[in-house]
Image (cartoon, rainbow, N blue to C red; front, side, top):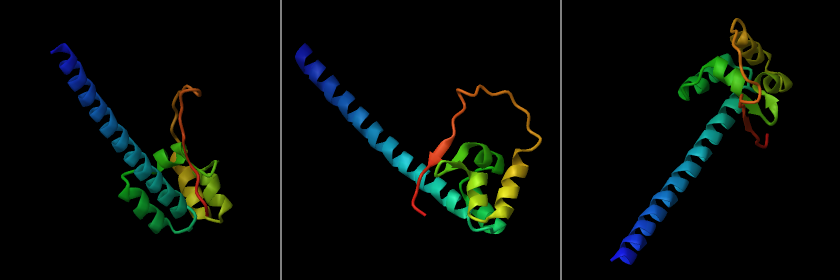
Length: 116
């Protein structure tokens, strides 16, 4: 009886862990694709297109400016490098006026690498 219980418990645990892993990997892919769209939108120099894409993912300019990195560069530098000066200026303005104390080691940025 104990052997049967332990086998059933092991099977249930394995199935739960397996389903959690698949859900997690699907979510990571979705987040990565969303951030790639935001990075690509920052290269077009069209504020309307950028705003539409950022709002569709329920992000703020401040969050994007402080936490998103595209191909190893902060998104404002990435936009400027691709000639999108309006978007770079908009992102830099969103970072002004905010004072916060942050532990540098604990701060995490999300880096997205993609082929242009």
